[in-house]
Image 1 (spheres, rainbow, N blue to C red):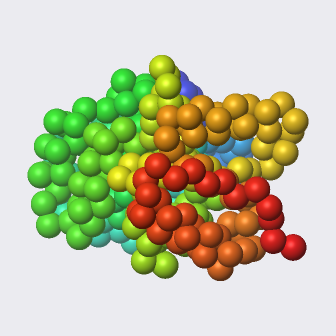
Image 2: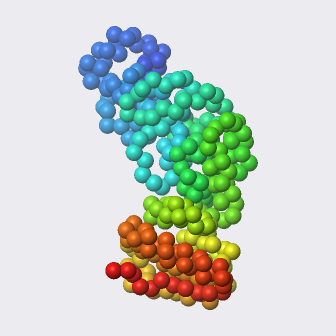
Image 3: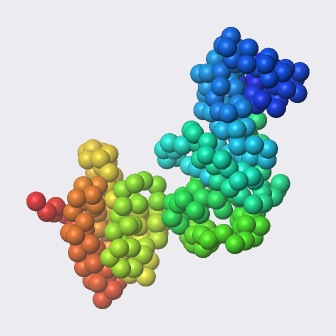
Length: 308
């Protein structure tokens, strides 16, 4: 029993215990004697219930039944392609899931065996299938960042992703995946922070043209990555978080801006406070910059003063 649980990050399912020769009453005695600790219905921790993250993931997969696998953002974390905070465990299951406290089960009518693998002894959706599933919970630019991370770690295949998408035909949000793939192909790294998501949300809500996100633009002999770029009018927007208040960072920002200006780009900088608390001013300033650049793509502007 201990050896079987050790291979599964400290947890074991009732079916496995029965296969080892224990009876239901034998399981109950071990629960009473604190040798087994109930985590979910039919799933136990062996010896103690202080589970690792991987142990909690494995317990959820076992509780969801045969054929279940870690999925969605939990799978992205396991694959190391999502940096954001994840507060729950996501599992995909073939059977109609009952309500299971402690994690979220996504029902799937058919899960092709090519879309599931094992990582660190945990059944998990492949990177390609994970990208398909994430189209239900992320927008295109957030998903483009997941693709960027997967590509950086050499875990992304456009062909495999398209094949997984085809096997999931009928899904409502596959256009999100298509847009994310197109953004990645255009060089976008997607949004990397809540501030960038908020700024992009402002742009969308205002009806202003949507920019490329976290792309490299040519500045002299080298390329510089900018947060947002409107290539048709050579406009760059940078969103400065708290770290940009440091003198060394401000000097580096100024150097980058000079290089971008010299290459013919306009540069507009907004602070995080601007985005979070001065949305109207941000949109007015951005709209004016877009209009000005549309009239003359060689114009250069930079927002220096902050509204009081």
